[in-house]
Figure 1: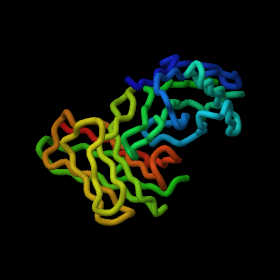
Figure 2: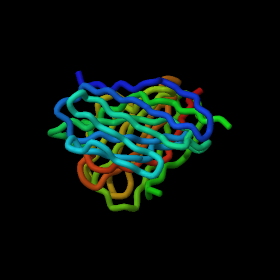
Figure 3: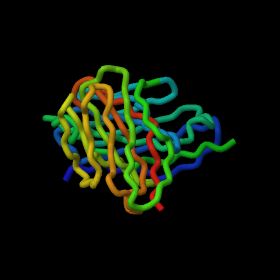
Figure 4: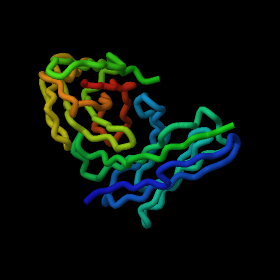
Length: 115
Length: 113
């Protein structure tokens, strides 16, 4: 069964610190892997999208890595800010995508940044 | 900021009422989607559309229905709301298949009392 598991479930860090969120998946083969940021009560916003052949992708203070061999991805946040407090969701698209049915969502990691 | 809008943002309604959640996008995307998300849980696809007059059920069974009469509009309807329908409903659209970039609306948080 295609699954996406994220860890930790929740995380609290001090403003200015770095953190790394993990995503393990069993989807194979896959087309791409994305990280979304979802603020409370809002829709997800895309941070990065990587194809199976990419190893890393950056978006400002967010850097995603992908190891297709071990089926692991991580999202590293540098110099965290209070506005980084949100849920971060890992999403995997299986290959041979059938439009609309193929996205596999993780449950997300809830990050809280405190001052 | 993505040009996809959902209304209302919040809705509290009594059991048995009929409701329609609105979703509109101005990007000209053919593909549109409805997801259901319970607190702390992952998103589950309940409906999708390839284009005008196309609607399909998603992976999660839902008592809601959808229509796609215009490209930019993809409303979701519950004929008779029940407390079990309480959830957050998220609309999304994409230009090509959902393996490419997808844009989400801000969601509608529905509470049925």
